Image (tube, rainbow, N blue to C red; front, top):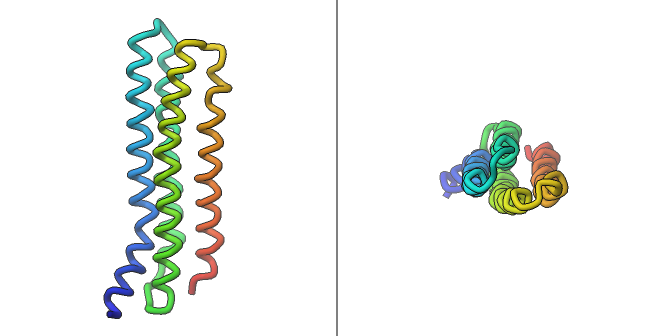
Length: 147
């Protein structure tokens, strides 16, 4: 039983990095596919589409920092906290990455039709980034209280 508890603690340490990487990969893929489609329909401004495609890449960075913050000796006393904080923050990053990719894809689609709304069309993606930052800060603050 003790081995299972310790394994859950180690899972919690590495979950934010793994789920953040999955989030970034999926989000960048969604936005990147929209970017490629948009480039076939317009005559210029390709760089902005590619730039938007990279927005979801931040979630793997947040996950790596959380992983390093949670990294410590795993004991039966702290395994539950490590598992809970790591898994829940990782899931939050995962959702943020996927939905930010979708928001970026929508911004790409809208700005290829009306280039003048390019900046404003990024607002939903920025709001979703804020939710990822909230999860990131929450994990950092809470991890300080785990023995």
